[in-house]
Length: 185
Image (cartoon, rainbow, N blue to C red):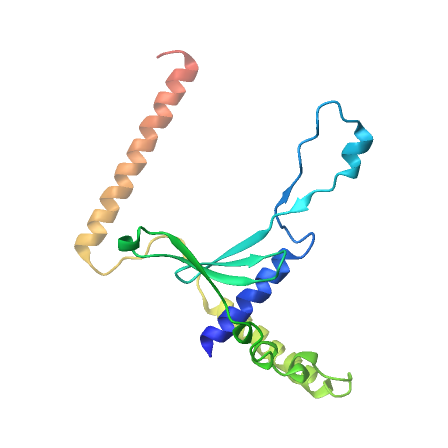
């Protein structure tokens, strides 16, 4: 069943991709030498014959001229790794459409504003409650001005050492930059 739905979904994607103007590859023939601009306008670009989409173990190929859908995969190394394409049976492609679309009434939503009035009031009440909780949480949080001690004295010593090291390093950089600006270096 899952394979059927997957193949049917893939087929729908292929058909949508093969629709005119849906990103299908177009190949324009090269103009003949000495042709006029009017004849160039008459030549219409044509879509590529095949549209391919990656799939499990290979790819699915849609023939845009015939509508045939095939699953292609590479053969084993003993066979030389040649690609083989097998047509996907029509019953798999046209499988149960209800499984893909689902109940239409659930997607349509409420029929009238009166039917959803209670739902809107409930949602507004929940939003107000959440806003008050957020405000309460923000008031309880203290602003963190500096790094809090971790409780491990060795870690605190290492952090203090690295902070002092960085402070000194940037101080030296500042002094070198100032000397360079004043022309002492």
